[in-house]
Image 1 (cartoon, rainbow, N blue to C red):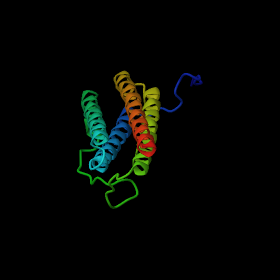
Image 2 (image 1 turned 120 degrees about the vertical axis):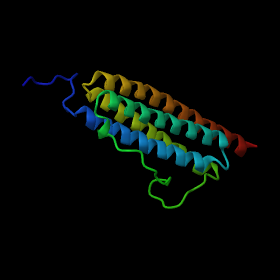
Image 3 (image 1 turned 135 degrees about the vertical axis):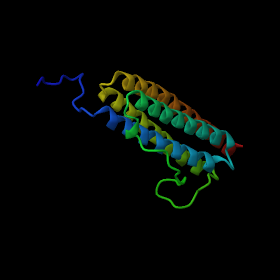
Image 4 (image 1 turned 30 degrees about the horizontal axis):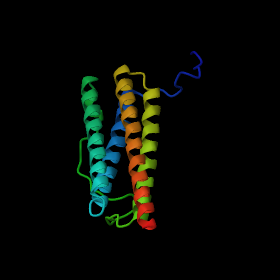
Amino acid sequence: MPTPTADEPTVDLPADKQLIYAHKLEHREMLRYRGLALSFLPTRPHISRLMAALGVECEQRSVALDELAKCLEIGDCLPASRPTRLWLPGTHVHLFIVNDVLAHRALDYSLSAAHHSCQISAVLAQLTRTPSLKALLEHFVEQKRHECHQLEEAKANVSAFSEWALSG
């Protein structure tokens, strides 16, 4: 057996396992963004719309994974869509973002989770040996980088507004 080099992945996950993992990641991201969209709706509808749009992107990525699984004839490996309640992690009540402190915390959390998701997708893309899955995951990584940039801009805009409000 040849020794792997630094450029070669050392973990060999089957394509179906990678698809399952990527699908679950997108599903969790979608639920998180939808919950945040609702949280921001009363006081910051522009951020709510951003979160809703990011949730739609996650849903589209899940659909793309479903379609790829069917093309690879492993469509049965992915879990069927199931309705899930929209709770923030670790809570059993829904929280609305009512001030700048909560907005900053929610955007920090969202940005951290988005960076984490991007890193996981990049690792999955690096590990896969299935060309069509690799191309799809690399496309996801680019989308997630853009997502992180949008969240950074939203956070900066909240910061700028907070500074303006405090100085006035």
